[in-house]
Image (cartoon, helix red, strand yellow):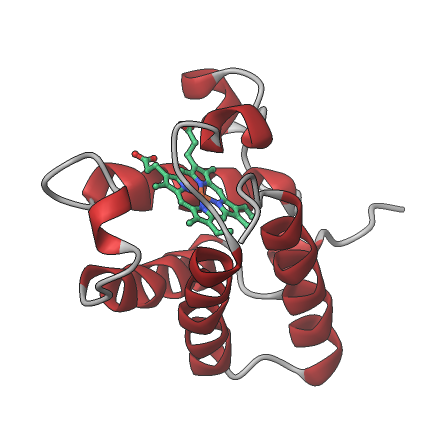
Length: 126
Ligand code: HEM
């Protein structure tokens, strides 16, 4: 018997595409977060976050084929992430998660992970 992955349960690539697109629409307008992103357009960052989340939740492993091991804490070290940045990130992510209208159980699982991950990436005391 094959178990359905969380990736499939929430609707596969299309769902992660919508999630991350909505999230970066918020980031693009955010005076705290936007300056952290080194590239002039956010398309590359959008591809990387979407690829990572797809892989994390049991979808295709394209992210690691292109980027290697995620090492998220290390990859965030160049950016100052204090509580302010973390909370701004989570605010846009909350809006993006809400926009998906997922069944409650799936939404809670996704959200709890994002909160946990965002807390783990704070690297600057505030
Ligand atoms: C990359 C900020 C939380 C996943 C980045 C980048 C910035 C950033 C500025 C560089 C953009 C780029 O890829 O060019 C933040 C801030 C966070 C946060 C301020 C607040 C806590 C998270 C969380 C996750 C995540 C919670 C995962 C659940 C990623 C991934 C990349 C990335 C996968 C690309 C890594 C790579 O392959 O180079 N983030 N991030 N981030 N972030 Fe975050």
